[in-house]
Amino acid sequence: MHSLLERFDRPWCLWIALIAVLMWWISRRSLAGLGPIRGKLSLAMRTCVVIVLVLAMAGMHDILTNNDLTVTFLLDSSKSIPADLRRQAENFIVGVSRDLKPDDKVAVLTFDGATNIEQLPSPPGPDGGIHVPPPYGDGSRPDQTGLAQAMRMAAACAPDTTANRLIIASDFNQNVGDAAAEAKTAKANGMTVDALPLRPPSGDDVIFENIRVSGYAHLDEQVTLRFIIRSTRATSGSINLYQKVGQEEKPIDLDPEEDGVGQRMQLAAGRNSFQIKLPIRTARSHQWRAEFVPDDPSADAVTQNNVARAFTNVEGPPTVLFIGQIRDFAGDSLLIEALRRENIRVDEIDAESADLDLASLQDYSAVVLANVPADLVSTADQQNLCNFVSDLGGGLVMIGGDESFGAGGWQGSVVEDIMPVRFDVDALRQIPRGALAIVMHSCEMPQGNKWGVETAAAALKTISRLDYFGIVSASGF
Image (cartoon, rainbow, N blue to C red; front, side, top):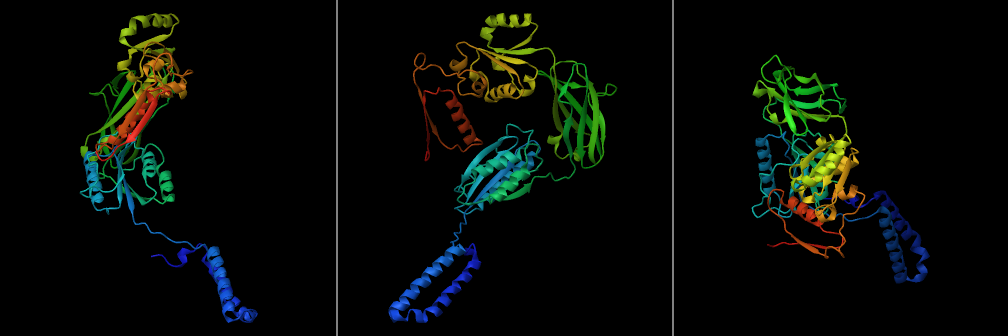
């Protein structure tokens, strides 16, 4: 219940209403000439005017109460969450959703380095639970915990017609973004944020926090790798280090005098730091992956956080990555030989087997797409090519052909945005005007709605600016 004073912005202005009493006292004789009925009627009208003005000055307003609630669950699906804890959190979500009122709504989002919408805000199902039952699928970036991005997504999904409550089930070991800042924003928007810590039953754990290494190095230089490991109690184990150059990853023997390739380590309780020096013999991007293996498994309740990664870029002679199709290799050889005659190193790969991660692209000065259609390059690899050009300063050359530019479906892609020409095909001379209609229906499957939206967006990018596009939302199937 709300008190009477809560219905006014400036309740102190109500004291001005005492003027009406004074006005009654003064008007006893000044209005005597109007007669008893007209005088009282005039005085009542003046009093009503004063009261209306006083209420307006006090900021009178009504308070509408809305008891409807939307509960949004954020479930951490990164590698740092053990499978059994994740199942317990999923069961908790199902149990809480069954206790909601019929007019309440529930939403479920899972996150690691990316955020997936499992269920948009919807009333509880017929059994009182959620519409998309667990278990939920794994994310696309399990090595990251992007809690801040997930909170922004949850705030965007929250309806403005109900009260909103956010329940976060995570170990809160974020390594991407600033969740504290997002929590302050959510609080400012009237959203209640609750935490459900997902901690292993045992308090003993070893966490490989990171590898500190220079991002750039020269050929034949020795780089220093510093390992930062945190342990809740003293324990021992070994560190295994792997080096990836290009597409090949191999272990590094850190202690040649001992059996195996790992190096023995004795950890103290708290933060531990170790460092080693390794020579660089190849002028390419070097990716490092280190893993700590404890001798006593009871000292490490969560093994998923025992791995850390880093990379070092080593510059060398100019190198070009030539991406083509096997059927065109014979014709491409003329250009490849011409580049090599100019002392430019060329790596030739087939488009269907290309893995264009950003770390590998740093080995090259430029990338050549030789008559490669867009459907042979994944959306993620296209974005990596864009970042390679715009962020790392690399070069990109696209060679024409029957499956290149607009004919290869590149129009509307992020690659077109960084190229100096448009990829639209002249519809008047080469292709007729087309139309694409898509019927969208909610999918009650893990990440079903997410894949539906991404499929529709990918289909839209394949048509030209002259084509027609329509989308229909269907329900009741």
